[in-house]
Length: 129
Picture 1 (spheres, helix red, strand yellow):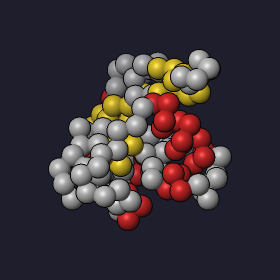
Picture 2 (spheres, helix red, strand yellow):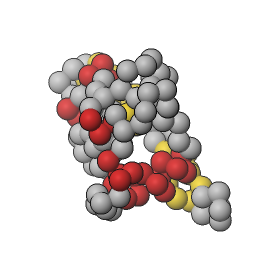
Picture 3 (cartoon, helix red, strand yellow):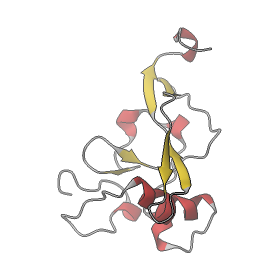
């Protein structure tokens, strides 16, 4: 696979070599994640972004399991409320939520969340409330 391209399993090899996955946030929500969240698996776009149980993986284990644009950005779907603790550490929401708006009508269609991986036990994190 070419560097910077899509890495991963069979569902991620749908694009020809040389094409990159560079959707806008609006595209991600409206054309990929909406159908996946509502279990509309018959839409071909819903299989492009894999479902990942975040607590099962450390960031160095993402290769082949997520859709990557080659810039250390990984695309995957994860249900809200899943545990974020792994065997080696935990994922923490950095509370930098960004609303995603529809360009056609200005309606908010989603929220972009950021997570950072911390090695070690969550109890050791002094920033927890």
